[in-house]
Image 1 (cartoon, one colour):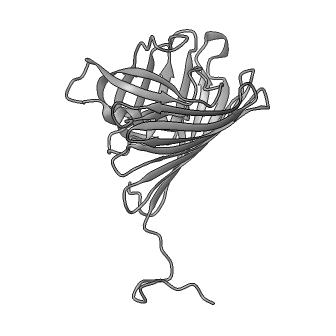
Image 2 (cartoon, rainbow, N blue to C red; image 1 turned 120 degrees about the vertical axis):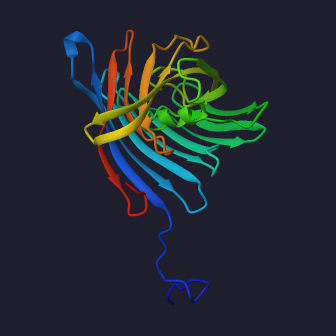
Image 3 (tube, rainbow, N blue to C red; image 1 turned 60 degrees about the vertical axis):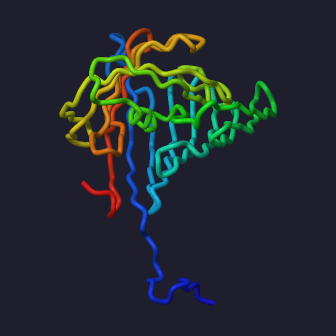
Length: 256
């Protein structure tokens, strides 16, 4: 039997979501490795007719021990996290896979890792969770929607962000870990990357002492169109890494 829409006035085909796809290149900024490719990330973002959005990303870090990560991360129409799946391998061996769900009053995780075995977590929340870090670079810019652009140069704090791993490369777990986040809005800029030239917003992630090892300062540029698409990023300190959007393909409803 042919599959027909409930309303005979509607067309058979339905495409009322908008999509964007891209590639982020990971390179080194260390003097002895300047410009060397050290990884890559392929992502797709779908925004549905009701405003909910999902990012799927495949991430590869070639530095030993290599890291490979696949994530599927969803937010509601107000950009609040709803759920996430993370699967991780380190050194070309399975590390773990986990499913995260975010309720207004708690976060929960069901995971299996090579180190901890089967783990069930539940973490109570004082307020609904505003953002989640799954370690896909494409999602790093989504935290920045929470920063007040009327306060350039001022350190602003996100009181609670949950992580799938406290490791700087996201190479442990996946399991729930809670920190606060300190960010400075630097200003609006015009940015040219491999994928083109964009009106951009420049932010800097600053000290986060809650991590087991403090993360070096991390500058991120994202689009200024309200979509917060990642454009480029640079980590200082011992990491000296650089990330750049080198390919971007927009679906028919995404816009320019």
